[in-house]
Length: 202
Length: 202
DNA sequence: TTTTATTGATTGATCGTTCAATAAAAGGAC
DNA sequence: GTCCTTTTATTGAACGATCAATCAATAAAA
Picture (cartoon, rainbow over the protein chains, first blue to last red):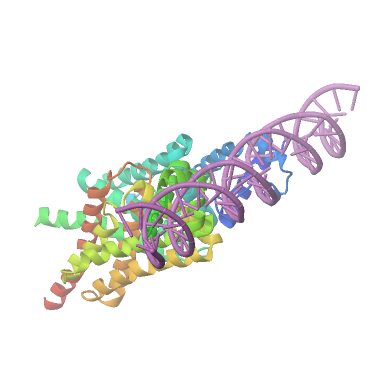
């Protein structure tokens, strides 16, 4: 039964199964046996690849962060305009792969775990800092520091908020709505500048 | 050892212990024995009062929702101005009792449970609807329906977002910052109207 | 034949739940 | 007020089920 040289695919399918199993059974009731069955492997294999249940969860959290980073990198290439780049960040957070209730459930489960797992807390802090600093950089190209910071924090909060709300719904329920509403907010943030420029000119 | 007529206090202290235990140990590792010890009672008592672990968690979720509703009712009495009432809703969500990482962890744990527990999902949906409809009502007194709806959804998302971010921090870290930023957004939403009025007049 | 990947039965520990025992309060008799 | 009985609240040891983790056996690939 050994499939040689397919370790990476095995890892991915076990992590995918972990995310789905957390969503279906809840974080308190998920078992290694359920995860293994969902991934179509024996109970021993997750342990072989990840060492322990904790190890598997740590790898899953790291994978969630990694997938989001990949999504952003895929989308950012051709864009230069700050506002376009901010909307690209919004869209990356709301893309099909990220906006699934199962994926959101897993993220939220790790938010709870963060207080008792240093590894998890570290990774979630990286997510928060990265989103803020990306937004801050783009806003900072147009707005003065104080306004850029406000806009970045507000935008990050609105992204996280819609994304939390989506946890309770079916796939894609809020997606386009959320994108539009965050878009309106981003417009408003940039519009501040235009008023300011008009005042300076006038 | 019996303390007669103190059932309600016992219930409350067990629920409080549940919230703290979830935060300290994570939802996957929390045990009835830990909860009991933290509440200062024997392992049998939580079962006596709540029937089962599931029953205790359901009661805890209901209590979280109840406490938030109480907080809002306490603050809403004297205010009539829509903008003041919206800021009261914001402040109620960010008040000391609600903005604690332990309380947030518990809410988030239940967001994950919602997919496998109909009771929990029902209660969380009530929270979402109630917040939106409260905001919608106040915005609706000043803005046209379309704008009011946008403002309500955006404000709810921003509240939820800051509140999610607070999960990773110490008590009160973001509180005043978050309140100010949501306040700025609420101001902007109302300012739309003023522009509109000026355009109509001019 | 050797190496590598995978299996799944087994084990030891943990945890939810039960329930008979116990201890405080309340009620009643004198 | 004191003694006894009944009621109510609480305890914690014991049980059974579940589950993470292990590892010897196995089967494909090299």
